[in-house]
Image (tube, rainbow, N blue to C red):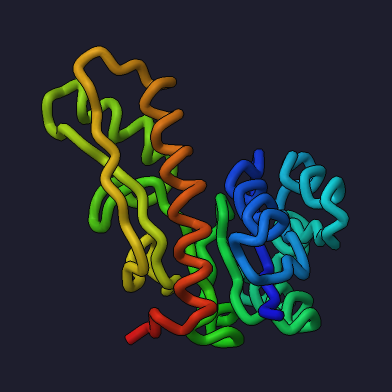
Length: 201
């Protein structure tokens, strides 16, 4: 059975969507490891409740020793390689990964980003899209799954879905629709990648 590693930094609702899809038979895969760079990430508790091994691997000790991001990425890759993942899923992972990590898993690292290609790269994409809507600059946003490259949110797109914005929307309402779309698209993209229906160029 294909082995997944899911990397998180926070609440882990997208991780939960993957766990649920596996448990319900919608996704034929095993989550071999959940990795977090933040000790307080609730996603670690989600993994533990589901009986999934976890790894807390912070960047701060490397910074404190004057070590490079590449050293951190290389060591992290080594720890993950032990579980022999078929696919690594970034589900709210808040670090940009360098070639020191990505070159260890060519074509096997995918990321969820809550914006459409070329829009709102980086952090706080949902709130930035909502503010742009309030200024009359956009009428929709969306989310995408893409292959990871060293440039942030710029790899080849696997799947994308538009999420509309409505005149009476609050940020909370918009966030709710975005998260629902994320939970759907992340499972779909994993399935496509594992079935080799999407091969990175």
